Structures are given as structure tokens and as C-alpha cells.
Amino acid sequence: MSLQQTIESDFITAYKARQEIRVAVLRMLKTALKNRQVELLRELGDADVLDVIAKQAKQRKESIEQFDAAGRKDLADRERAELEFLEAYLPRQLSDEELAAAVDAAVAEVGASGMKDMGAVMKALMAAHKGQFDGAKASAAVRSKLS
Image 1 (cartoon, one colour):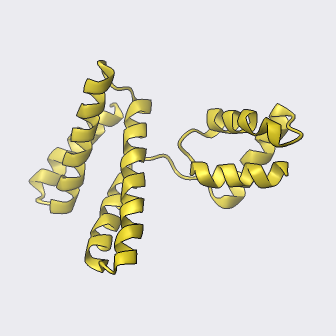
Image 2 (spheres, rainbow, N blue to C red):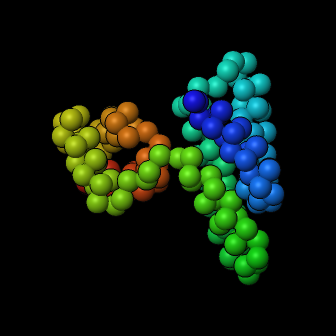
């Protein structure tokens, strides 16, 4: 079963169980997937679906920060609940130690010697662990390793 079919199945299950937040999140996700499908003019593969989910999760994280800064705990808590549902569909994120090990492996693979090789290291890291880490964290780890 594809990831998109899993989302559809989970939506139906949540709808029948009257799980309001989960239904709202999955409905929004289905809409985002449909918009992406129309944009690309083709059926979405699992990689495309994961990209959309990651984008939605990133939006939730940014919203949580803004709501916390504005003192809106109620809205931040709702966003956290939505983020939790979205993260269930994403691959497991690498821990800081695992990310450091992956960066070391990518640097060794590329044979990087300085900052000029950062792009090649990031490319190798993305190829090996796409969707399993935050780009900003990885960039900082690569930068500290190469400098």
C-alpha cells in the first residue's frame, strides 16, 4: 500500500472514530497532496508525498514557535498535536550523534578538505539520508566539520 493510500485509509478510520484533530490534519494533508499532484501534472510517488508531509511539518514547527512567542499556549498545543500526527508518516529523524557520524562518512566519501567542498558533502549526505535530518542542523554540522 502506498503512503498516499495509507493516509486515505487513516483518514477514513479517524473520521469514523470521530477524532476531530486527526481528521482535520489528514484532510489538510490530503488537500496539500492534491494541490501538489495538480502542480506536477502526474501521480505522486512516496518520495513526493514525504516531501509534502515534511513541508507541512515544518510549517507546524514554525507556527509553534510563533504561537509560543505570542503567548498563545492553546494554539501552540493544537499545532503540537497536529505535528505529532504528521511525524508519524515521516521517516525516523537521525539523532545528533547519528547525524555527526553521517557527516563524517559523507566527508570521507567525498574526500572533502575545506569549505569549498561543502556542497558536495551535503549532496552525499542528502543522497544517503534524505528526509532523515533537518537541513539547517546538517549544514551546521558539515560547516563545523570542514572548518
